[in-house]
Length: 166
Picture: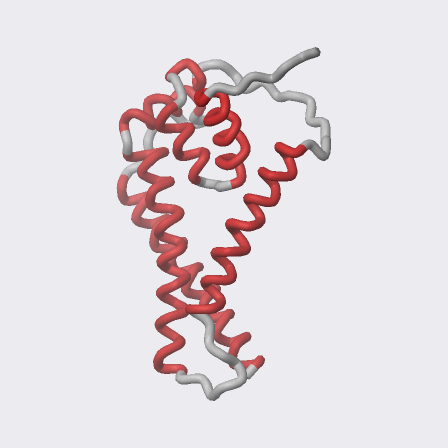
């Protein structure tokens, strides 16, 4: 008989390999911070993908769906008007726009810092860049402006949809 033995280290490794890949972009951020330097020097080896309904896959897949569904439900419950009641537009317009701007900033700002601002991770990624030159701060300010304006435009589309539904 083959007997599986578990120790704390292997259990934690297995738990991390199940939970973190579903939680983009946190997994990639942690990988950038803690992966060894040589993990970024060699070309990536693509593995043949075979789909299997393993317990690990099912747990990872459902955990990812659960986290995104929970965030969506909380966002809908607390930052979306009740369409059965008259809508106070003076309250809901800034709430929806600020919610979207908040989620945009909470994802993109840390990602920018990890890929362009934090020396430890920038040095790891320098061998992978198509253009070895780092963009100037003015370029990042320009990109931030257009990303946030796109976020506000999407929020205005959402507000239009809410108006049409109500």
